[in-house]
Image 1 (cartoon, rainbow, N blue to C red):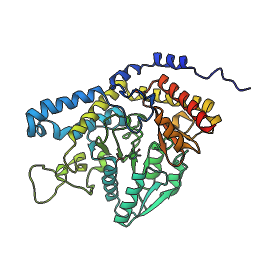
Image 2 (spheres, rainbow, N blue to C red):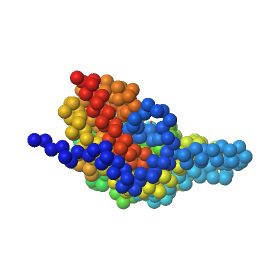
Image 3 (spheres, helix red, strand yellow):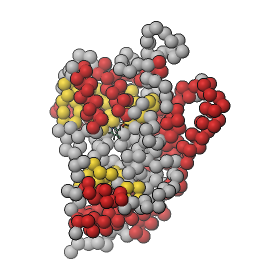
Image 4 (cartoon, rainbow, N blue to C red):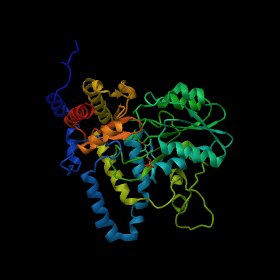
Length: 414
Ligand SMILES: *Cc1c(COP(=O)(O)O)cnc(C)c1O
């Protein structure tokens, strides 16, 4: 006979919230004004806004921009991409100062960073990536390979289990210039083995460019200690920096000499105001910039990083594991009988900040869930992603949402 005694009740979820040291952080987010929303389970696509962001933007507009005007650039704005980059490196990436900079979107950052990595391996012919990598990553890899006359070596990854270090070891050779992979899979939340994959690539002297979009602010990484070469990522997911907020680039110090990036602009030039006839790259990480920094977007990034610093990435990760575990326990009991299957790793150590459930009617179900206030997202062909943001999602919110999923799915499928 199936045992149901261990299944957490709504009261149990309430108890978990009471004992949660991160529970007070929920108050730092603006309330959800829409009364029809039961639960927001898509913070892994767009984090909710922070009161602090409003304050910083208000101050920026009213006291800096309006009164200091153009002088603002000399009074701190120009340095924001590096200053905030250093802070992000310390708080979330395990990166020492001078290696992280905020710029552009992740797509553009990946384009620039992958080109830069390839410029350090001019005699090599191949880029390695995987077939289930995020679309923007695959498109950019293919476009760069075309432009540079390189070959893409595709690793056939299992969407649920992700890319393994063994697959990377088998794919790379002395022809490989660079390997680029997502650290946390956008589909399954599988966490790739960063140290082992770096090692496999370095064994043939290839470089690795990590995409940390679903990692940053959710799963701690140690870019310096794991010998990572380059990384990019966005700030509007778990960092709650706001729609379209700038992305970041990490370039290991030792790689910053002589790299060539494809969008050199006046902001990456050695002397910004020399207006020199010939381009000379700035020393250090500024060489990865192109144009004028998005100062208003950076306000949200600063707010998100400071909140994370206060909470601590290790505590965030610990709650993230508890939330995803609860989602799995409840969906095993309530949703598996309705035809849902878990498409994320069961092993906590290999699972990032969301849980994906597959269902043959996922598209239809996701639409109905969203219409009924349970904000999830659909990922083709058959995945419903349940995103859990430890600083804004409560255990009660999750429990209530999955209870509603069970109810709605039962109705729709019967
Ligand atoms: C969200 C996401 C992106 C987004 O790229 P943008 O240029 O910010 O739109 C890129 N890669 C991965 C893995 C993502 O999850």
